[in-house]
Amino acid sequence: MNKNQNISFQVDAGGSLKGCIRVPGDKSISHRSIMLGAIAEGTTRISGFLEGDDSLATLRAFQAMGVDIEGPDKGRVVVHGVGLNGLQAPAQPLDLGNSGTSMRLLSGLLAGQAFDSELVGDSSLMSRPMRRVTAPLAQMGAEIDTTDAGTAPLKIRGGRRLQAIDYQMPVASAQVKSCLLLAGLYAHGRTCVHEPAPTRDHTERMLNGMGYPVDCSEGAACLDGGGSLAATVIDVPADISSAAFFLVGASIAPGSDLQLQHVGVNPTRTGVIDILKLMGADIVLSNPRIVGGEPVADVRVRAASLHGIDIPLEQVPLAIDEFPALFVAAACAQGRTVLTGAEELRVKESDRIQVMADGLRALGVDAEPTPDGMIIQGGDIAGGTVDSHGDHRIAMSFAMAALRASGPIRIEDCANVNTSFPGFVELAANAGLRMQA
Ligand code: S3P
Image (cartoon, rainbow, N blue to C red):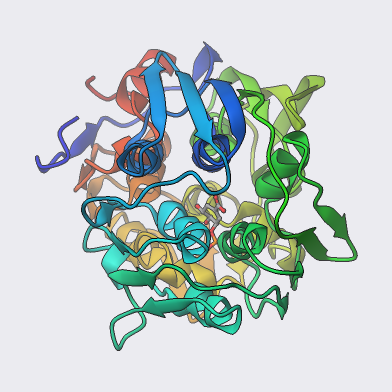
């Protein structure tokens, strides 16, 4: 898929999802495997790495800072760590494409370096809020310039002596938490980040796995600056956020019976499974195991008749990337589904509340956007054309909607599917989605 080409998906109506598939590696864990591998002592060997544009942007950023990285080759990457203080000044601004995780986590890591750096990205990333990281980093003594709107480019001044902080996050964000923990590695003293609700904890798990103690208790993650990370072996599980499209697709398409292999089921990520089950989905986990400190399982999903629910507030951060897909499930459910407490969706790769509501309405679905969520009345889905606004998860969600539509669905602006799910079209077509690879 060529990023510069405007790609649309054309999906014929109907079909069911069957067979046994493995979706690509977890995006969040792939980013962290490169970042932490790069600043570790020794050689980190990664398998299952996501070869999508976002995680590749992180990989290239570290290559630009002098880290010797081999691969990726069929998901295998070898990172020759340079230690906490071994990164070198990049010759140019680091271009992080569409990747918010790269920009927010790197801002923390780079705030503690001896050299200046600058972070840029595509038009979506350059309009996303960055004060949520630059403000607490400034409290630590970092000096980072943004635009007046608080957006990138981020110009990060090196050579600052960082001081640890005890920080209460106003939003439940794993990117902010991870950013501050990475800055905390370079800070004098003990950095503690308190979260208003549990968020994904891959950074904490990986740091602990690399021998860098992170204390996680009572809603906070704390670490002392100035230690060192030991290189390790990382097996990245399949991304539950990519599996989510298939969990929804197989649930809504009559006759479906699909097995998803080696899926990461970290409890800070499984909101999509719990929410779908509350809606009546038939999802069964088997063969639970721990792989490199992360829970993994095989997941079987069969078609079921879904009903609308009020989505529990505490599930929102645990399913934050899965709401585009869950909105499609809600459109196919009997009765009303109400989401609240999810204003964060408005500042993702697109405004996911507005863009999903517009798309669902274009397909005849009764969807009412609210400031912090959506009210969806389940019913029939018509064929039609929707605009994904360059948002990968929106494109893939509407592709799944075709399984229950009465006519073909055309989805515009889909090139960014490659940021998180290279090979989506082929895998989905093989499983039974009626789209041309
Ligand atoms: C991510 C955290 C979440 C999520 C994003 C990946 C991460 O963002 O939406 O796709 O890897 O830490 P927020 O921290 O903004 O909630």
